[in-house]
Image 1 (cartoon, rainbow, N blue to C red):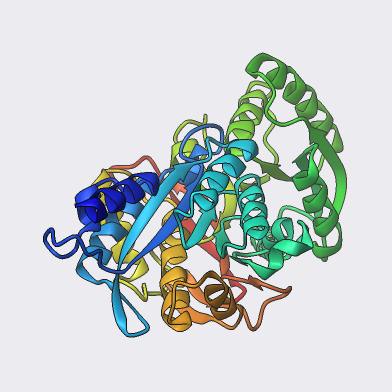
Image 2 (spheres, rainbow, N blue to C red):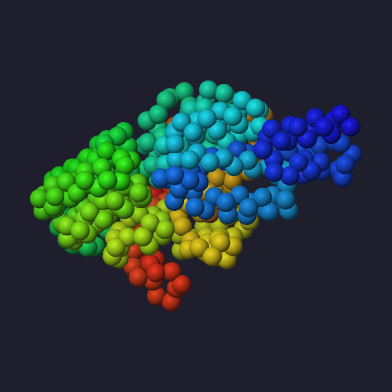
Length: 409
């Protein structure tokens, strides 16, 4: 009896929703082998669009692992997924990661949802010797962080230079000219983007760069962005590239529409990936953006065997919501974790990290290969360019149509 009580307490500490699931022998008191995976993403707050698909990912993959335990070494392991909300706050992201690793509740951590979530979580993992797999942040924003994290953190996503190649393709097709105005936040993300873009937009000239303070209260933000609109208009650049979060771009677009400012081409980095934002904008048609993943991508899940189209269809069937780009990368995190655990043959944390260092796995977002990355512990995934258009024959008002070929692996 004391063993059952102790195991139940340990499961509660680990955040397992159903304590009885910890007993795989029908009550004999002997626990089946289990691997515990932490999953930290922004479910609420300003970055919530990045986490819209997280509840689906957790539910979908819990069902999968219940039917298909992982074969690690000579034993079959049940899989627990312990999800935590960063609340779009870097300090909160670090706090929930610290709670997970200090309690010994997890064998590894998965994290997604911009560098504001990825970086603090990976730093906690590095400090505590816990393997961490991350995505959904341009790799330059992660690689520029503390060097000591590299022994434990492995990141896969596209980079800013990849995005620049997509932008050039989009703008070449539009034929609107070769001068660009840039709107970017006045923070480390904005600085990094403007530095990389300056050297990556071959054939295009940045004639104006407007920096704004992100995350201000609505009234103050509106006034600041109203002034930004006037200065960007004065540049007379036919192309506008906005590096902005979903909330900040929505505030900017409202000011631009009031001022009747609409350049020939408007491209948005990051913040325009989500249907929930596009649906809220006034006249969003023909806005362009990067496309990380879509139902059209020709990849399959190494876990479920689903194609990208089937995974997106399952999401809509389960949630009644339009597919969103983070579905693919959220799912792929668990593909990579499963492949690393199987390769390690153990739940030993050092063994998992060592397995990740040479891992190559085909996922629903493409091949993730840490032996061929542009920087240590970095793997890149393909990136395409898309244009938001009014949807035809769809229950949703707008859809992103891929118009620029994928770049990258």
